[in-house]
Length: 410
Image (cartoon, rainbow, N blue to C red; front, top):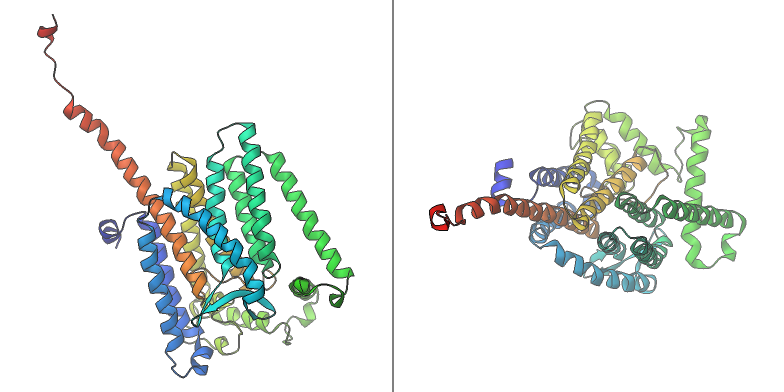
């Protein structure tokens, strides 16, 4: 398989393998986890075909993107940033709502989330800003300020409807700045400011009644209730087996994981897929563990860790800052989002709306994640090409170097 990838697909073969395997796992698990959707649909195969169609389109898109030089990706990111900023504002007025959140537009029966485009654009733009710092205090101050402006423009627009996505984006950018060498003092002050902001917002929510607050803060009260419920469940051991309307997702997720054991009940034999709300999206990792067991769950984790490891190796080998930070930033977004999703499914964190990258059901998420992989693979393709040219140049110079007769010089 690796020889096939090297011959027909450019870029890092290991990342191509991880990408393709995640797509295959996604189709396999969606076949099982989407049973409730199939039951509601007039065509029982439609949910799986729809998901497979998004994956196929995403794979084709990743292939096309990986052929684009990253210098053009750098330029397109600014257009994407401007467009996502406009769309994030418009979604509050024209967007579709579900579960008290307004996060997407519906176009021709397909849903589009502007926050996904915003995440991609912000990571590329931040990598570009970081690459412009030339070891000067003035440069660092200037571009650090630019990064804060971008975060201040985008994160609050995401925050009101999707707290976890806004914090995930901030966390990835913060790690990029740390890896990129921004001074610890600046990063410390930024982290302190964000912590005080979050604590202050939480205190305000706990003291001011919801009916007295503007409607835009409704999701903040939802998040507060989720955090309170999560902490209370950890304290009240006697109630951890009681299923209520509030904890139905969490409890059935736990049951699915408990049924999985070491080797699972095998794909297609899940029981909890019929009881677990959002089994095909936010809690699909619980279905994976139920069907593939602890072994399968660990293998999925290893897929993401291999991606992060390879990204780190690529960044180390890169001789320029922009491609290194670009690969690191995109890989961190995929892997951290995956770990947040898995933490929710295994009751290690409060419920959020984070899908498992490439595996959970979703149109925009799948397409944008495939673009992540396409850009990463494109960077590796270009870096391999540059290294090949560097290796070839000395041989060409030696071959074309003129032979001089020393007797003619005497």
